[in-house]
Image (cartoon, rainbow, N blue to C red):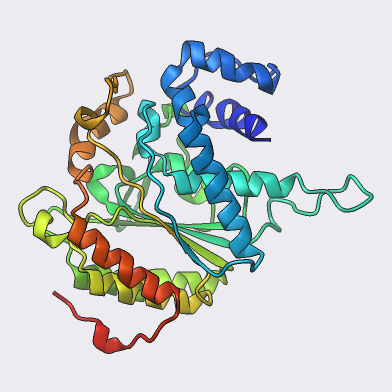
Length: 343
């Protein structure tokens, strides 16, 4: 089933929307695609067929299944993966797993019948929060390919890409993303469940108070209105003020502020929350050489200007604080407003 899923991603997204795969794999048998991809696109093969990549996709998908079925309550997933295919720098493993989960659900048949249990509009109501700091059109396209029931909330620095949203107009043709020019669509035509929250970081840092207020006034209210059954959060946990004060990273988020944000989200979905801290890596830190050069102007900009900023390394003390406070909230242990302070 995973082979068929990746084949559809290639033929529905990577090839026609991004022009990232040139060969036509649509008519090829799924079990032959892996060999062809490995020979012609070794970085793409690594991202989807290497042992670590398959374990990541399958494990996260199974966890989503268990949470939606009520077998477990919540999860914080400490799995790390570095994508090597240039376009996949914009992909989060959690978005891929949400898509694979929905694809698998669509294949389930009723007992003694070939009729499918789910359609795209009746799948579980999931909310995906992309809180990586940069815009990812690839996450949006991959998630929406197999479901009409996923709310996507994207919080990002407006300078990293995305549609130009002004007071009087929303410009389609000038969208700054990696899609082929003739494949760019008005973001509202992609999904009515898409909430883009671009932040103007040109005047300085986005503080903990700014982020808390954004979640309080926009994000949690949108989740409640959508009536999500589960919330999935992609956040790198490297918005450490001790680092951002001396780096170009425009976001600052204190661990206690994060725990309050998470607590409010948990209240909206009875703690059915899954967190995966995916972070992009600076190309010079890969264990073997990678080539992120190409002809796509936006990806060239992303590799040169965005990746070095958001590849900000983890700081152990900060990550541990965020991790432990997250576990406390997810485990529904005693939590009060006294835990929360703005810095």
